Amino acid sequence: MLINFLVTQSGGKWSSAEDLLGSSAEPVPPPIFMKTVLKILWDDLNWKVFERYFKEINLRMCDNRYPADRVNGLNFLLYQPQIPVYREGDTVEQAWSRSWISLRDHIKSSIREELNLGVNKIPTWKQLLDHTGVIPAVQ
Image (tube, rainbow, N blue to C red; front, side, top):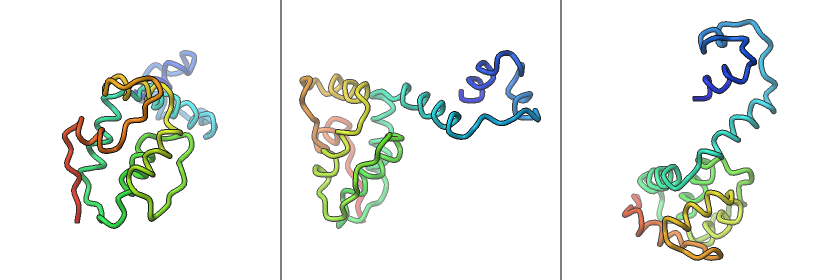
């Protein structure tokens, strides 16, 4: 998907992904390139993508003494523009509340819609677990 995007955005310079990768053209400057990549990723985030990442992070083994690790791992998977502060002693719900603030609006509305929540309601981590049917793996 990303290669196709770069090929189509090149102004017709390359006719295929192979031409793009094999060319000696100047590379796209990293800040612009990363901003483009992140914009694509953020635009594609919806309930289905969130649900997949949420399930995956909860199925990984986690030390029961640090339950907030799952929330912080999810933040990285979602390519958050700002990662909330990690606090070792946080409960899952405390870490999730901080993460909710930094989620993009269209992801929030997608989650609220899936869980049938009102506009200003914040779903709890437990609600998400119950809704997805995931049982977190613990050591």
